[in-house]
Length: 188
Image (cartoon, rainbow, N blue to C red; front, side):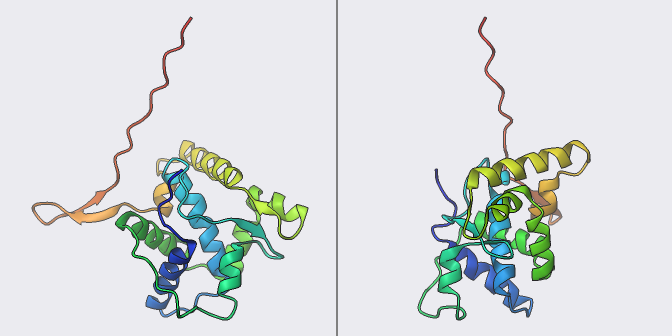
């Protein structure tokens, strides 16, 4: 399975920088919830692909990425230089920040704690892994359910289309082309 970003640290740096651009200090709990949601929604948006190589486990409040938790325990490490992100990954993280960055750490924690992959893992205790497969299954089903009852694609509420300019200078929304897969005909 290919991943979009080589390290979850690069995602942390991007989200931290977006917060600083909005003159906000990103609290550790909020950062971990955003990482979790980014991984989950990326999988929905990009056919089950991982955004980053990350493992999420439960703590007393919700999902955390243990390596990031350990490394950032005393603030942002200054000896690590982030790798540049692809335009797709940057745009995706910008969308995650626009959608969820306005929420407080407490609201994000409450929101995520109600989601079955987190709730089921938390019911088992601390340091229980929230598997990627459970995340993909839940968030894909949630998006499909919401899409069925709405004219608006729920994924577009999280990941907004890029806006570019046409040859005449008018703004246009741009999304990646995703051809629909046609199931193979059944053989009798």
